[in-house]
Amino acid sequence: MRASDRAYQELREEILTWRLVPGTALSEIDLAERLGISRTPLRAALARLSLEGLVDTSRGRTGVVSDVSAASITELFELREALETAAARIASLRRDPAVFERLTERFEAAPLLLNRGDVEAYYALVADFDAALDVALDNPVFRGALDGIRLHLARARRIATDNPERLIRSAEEHRLICAAIRDGDGTFAASATTVHLKASLATILATLENRLVPQDSPTLKGSA
Amino acid sequence: MRASDRAYQELREEILTWRLVPGTALSEIDLAERLGISRTPLRAALARLSLEGLVDTSRGRTGVVSDVSAASITELFELREALETAAARIASLRRDPAVFERLTERFEAAPLLLNRGDVEAYYALVADFDAALDVALDNPVFRGALDGIRLHLARARRIATDNPERLIRSAEEHRLICAAIRDGDGTFAASATTVHLKASLATILATLENRLVPQDSPTLKGSA
DNA sequence: TCCGTTCATTCTGTATACAGAGCGTAAGAA
DNA sequence: TTCTTACGCTCTGTATACAGAATGAACGGA
Image (cartoon, rainbow over all chains, first blue to last red; front, side, top):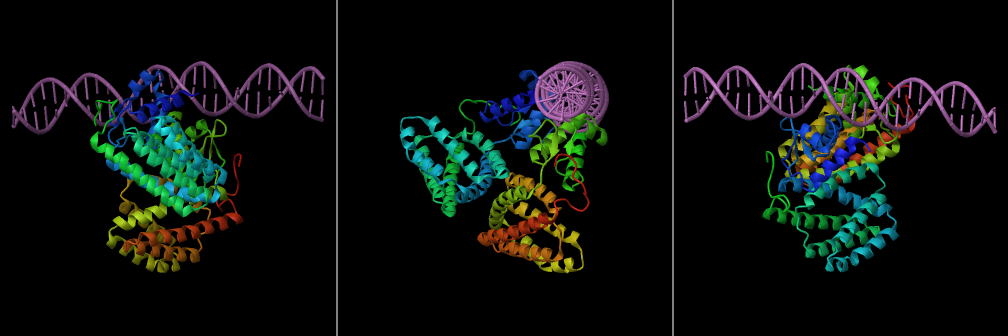
């Protein structure tokens, strides 16, 4: 694997897990030394992160980890709703009913997972749902746009507390979406997606009001 | 301005205007020599074009100008419809009515422009509409997604013949969208956007059936 | 005491040199 | 005649050196 790819993956992981908090200055020289590579591949990694929106190079010469605010998350969800409702509608036309029947059953059984505390298994189920949606969409361009959203969402989700009650409701919302797609009811699938996203956004914003930085990151480095 | 930015703009312009046709191999050494810069900033430009989808680096080591096919355009318009209908709906909530009243009037008068052959003035009007939509959207993330679509659209539009009849109908479709946004009628604005996009796609695809390469590019270089 | 100017330091942007890998071609054998 | 193998070339990926610009601090003047 190329050094630039490794640097990109490493930095992306650090940003998504809040080890690099928003506002952190990203000095090319420091990062290159820390990652054990030269500045050339590192610059490629930073350029990629910048185009994906995880690094902000607009103000000043040196890049900083992009901001995560209530406003930016709300904007992100506005775009997300546009994409995911349309995706659900399209997927309803092209889906394999058996795939979404199986997903419906799994989301119906999800409270069992969550009641015994297996949150990881639930997130894996959601990932399977996303993957099934991508397959049903059958549109690489659209999928690329969704991936861009999911990247930022993964970072935002880290600041939301995963309380079991919310996750159980989330499972029920997903079950409705899956059932609608299974039945080929695009309108219902889109509406159920809107319902899910509004609730998801409300949870994140409610968490945000209490604390802006996750527990593992007590301090804000850089020019926040 | 940075050399990498100049290289990016130059290459983007050449791709969008079909001077670099799909399938053209993009050798770093040749391009760097032609543009009069070294490979380092050129690589940054190519990486940017690759992330934006204008250059395909997936197959083989050397990048090629990405493909434009009926399938890829249809996929692009599926994403475009998702974004622009939602944008029209949102803009209807936040717009300045006076701005879209003025645009409505201008689109109403557009047939006068087109009947005297001033196609450029019409395209400038459409650009003003896009800009007004961006302002009303008031969402940088959403706007970024729309810009990505418009980039590819600018290339696809080059292969569509701009017959006056179609452009006059296009002006009427835009007038409906503007009037709906002016009135705050998001549902109507979204529907009118769908109507416009379906007609626009049909025009491009119909042109595509006749010839795949615009008149200025008689040959397909590379592994098309 | 505060503001402006200047100097030094550091960082980015660019060029170039080098290594490794992939691909094409040509030659030899079956 | 065709397939396989080996050689060579070219291209990408990486490292490093250098120049220019921006920023911060320090000093001097008001």
